[in-house]
Length: 383
Image (cartoon, rainbow, N blue to C red):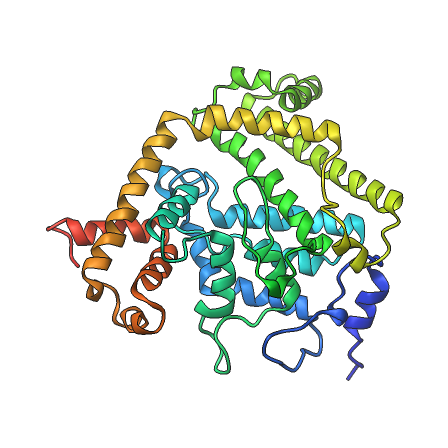
């Protein structure tokens, strides 16, 4: 039988000096024997993929409720896109691809049904009871709510993955960080690139879904510099192709341009600031950022999406409906907790009625929430 190679040693030799190495991980809350041919971060990735919360992302909203169409992004497809972009960036920079992938796969586990509308609704309903924030809920899932192991609750992930989850930060995400995760320090560079990969993924797939749904008029995108720049190039290359193909090629080029700009910008910062270790990364403010030119183009694109997609009357109507559904579910469970599943109801004495109900609703898919609403209010629906 061939000798098993030392994967931690090979990883350490291969990665850049400022990358996070599995062998130097701050470890897990509950000590476990390590695997003979998977690094700790690879095991974290696998645990996330096999958990219940990950599977439920298939029927959770990105922008469009799942039954609006089969080709729109869901939280699951968005998460896969973020993981793919994150691995590409990590590889180009000599970072730990497995760690970046694990953080990317876990970054949206705590999202409730109906996207950011669902998050806002639950946060309002939990006022005075600790509120609701999806990064904190993601951490809660991997530390407590998943039940797969006899010796502990949660998935017992490494510190670095948990830190990447709780410090995930974007336009929509402003996580609270407790002392365990060193509030004043930046996370590893692998976590930082996931933040930007998340933004690259959702900006570009929202253009795609917005055009497919006809909520975005193609002509209006002419106002957006990064779109017009790459569409013109694609039209010169493929003058006879239909608009659908031109759209796909334009989005591919925008993603490539943004990823390339990010890699070049990070490389330049590392060289200029003499960053040579993980501690150098943690001691500085965010290193993962676009160049000034790309950042300006990205801001323009986000402003366009907000004005033309996120505040479109159809999206507003879907959001208002979702808000009413979640509010009604929350209030009926509060009034009569025995409407909850027996095992869920049993947790009330331990952690409180409001948090149990919040956890239960946050774990719902869009489909389950809609079905539950029908069961509780439609007299002809079986309970």
